[in-house]
Image: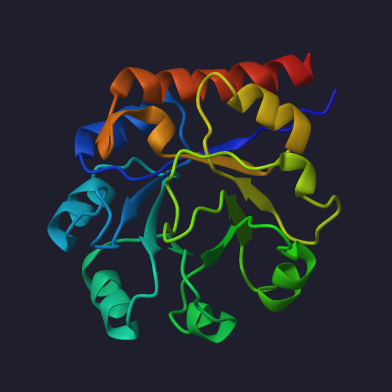
Length: 214
């Protein structure tokens, strides 16, 4: 009996109603995207409304891709974010300079050295592992080979990349991540969240956790 609970983040939200729904269903965090080219991107007023809709103990996460320092600071001045998530080529020094806890995303292309990432980004709260697709910073809906993840890394792992209600239980069993992160897997179409899929995804994680604890 492990008793471990897998944390859940629903990313790429654009509606406060979806944030409230995710929180009520059991999500631990919701993500808002500040990368303008993304179909899931929101402006500062929309992001502020989503963060304000969250109940206590549900984290608001801001996702950035190679944003200028001034852009990140402007967002932080106007949106209550509990965590920053960096998906570009940001250095450890850049990620650390805002005084806000952060997660560093890693695109799992062939030859990626997670041990080295963990060493360089030792101040990160976690590494978020996503599938690699040329020219795409994330949210592709693609999976990657979970067997490529080394065991015993000295930093929590958040598993992302192509997760859905249908495969997240297996992901939790095989990888044992601290958390799972989903975006495209709970969408009706690209950038448009499906409330039913959000709830189904969360329920799938909860069922797997309950089964492991039995």
